[in-house]
Amino acid sequence: MLAKHPLASENPSTRGADTMDRCLFKVWKAGSRTARNVIWEELWRRLYGPVAVGYCRSFAGDNTTAQDWATDAFNNAFLEIDKKVRACQVEWQGEAAFVSFFRRRLIHRCQDVIKRELRYQGRIVPLNSEGEDESD
Image (cartoon, rainbow, N blue to C red; front, side, top):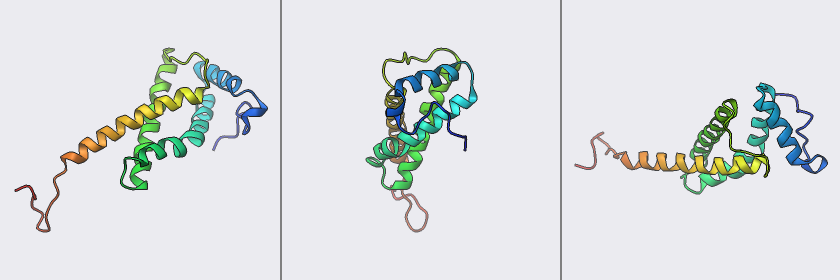
């Protein structure tokens, strides 16, 4: 695990959260892998369980499935933004906290994963005890 970045304080009230976001984002945009990793860890800590898993749990049959879907959605959202950051095409302008910007992306990716998984599950044909298709 990486050491805590000096700008990533545990208590956002001790340092303006938007200042932390802007500073780290600027360094990430300049190509710093350390800043990228610090941002990833902070987003994971703040949004993975309470937002992504919580949202996916509403649609999944069990907690393990919800965690799988949430992990997929989180990684997709972060990689999408990382790719745009490296190409200097990211839409975040710094008005709102980066966490809020990412949260919106994360929920959209959760919706994509849920739709994909439920569509896939709809194609599964249950087998009877002899291993034959029950739809016959």
